[in-house]
Length: 446
Image: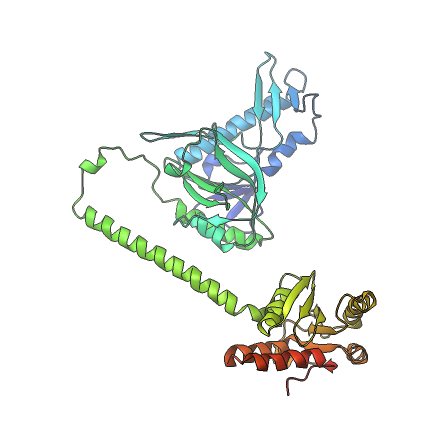
């Protein structure tokens, strides 16, 4: 059956997801799934109404020409429609999680005050088991807190798979809390937390419907994000709703139930061990291949650590000075400058930067007088196919000052040799001496 999907203020480039508006447009209950970014909703009043003396925004229904009355009617209507979508249709609402933001107090002619914010359209749900009760959104707090320390929960939810696809681009500006400290995971599926355990992504059942609160994805392609959400919504719609199991249910066993539960427990234990092993091997792989980053990356946080690791492997003591390095060894000390670019060759500016560092060191008398310039040009090209990666001016300058000029590819080949042959300290000493004593382009160790 073809599903009807719509997005509100959330750019999702997909022909199957139509664009809608919160204050106008079709009813939520006519949809099967709704994707909404509620952040712009409060713009309707935040920029037009001044703040009162107590720091709150208010509008008075008897003097605002119907502004407050119309707003409250829209929110009530949308709340009813969202309730029908979740309870009666069994659909999905995917909503980005932010702080509640700038609220508005609507004061009626009778003096009754109603407060609305960007989440006042959310319908209510009450989930109860023998010991606890989850009341949403009345007991929910969307507490401001920012970060990108995302820890996925390891569920089988398709919306966690959506988060996994955009790993590294997710940031949160709010966390979900319950004011009664209800254990949320007893009723809802927690998809992700931060490193201290705060909930930053959760899906809450409304009978057979589902409300999903997700953090923001930075710099994602609207087409890729639209496709990922579309797939997640399609998988989530036919899933059964939440019903608390009564304590008498174990008295009604099904033939073969116990063996299936035992098998599931065994498989779960095996899965956990495999997951731990995968994480361990992945870490080892990352550590063993970290040197490769010097061949294709550029920037302080990418190429500099890779070159630092390479020099440490050769026996240098390395100190990072921003994007530059200070290396020490019994064979001599040096200041290392790194020049990495997508351009065909490294220009004179990088040589002058190293010259300035060494000149200050010579003048102060506190540091080494040797300079090493590590270059990585044409980063996107196969290192074997790269032409000369530095200009003639850079080579002449390095020769005149007694600086060593070495490409990351040459350094990488030394690292390969050191890792494969595991040479003794005497051999490593010869390599360090060759680097320290090199004037001009490094041609290898004789």
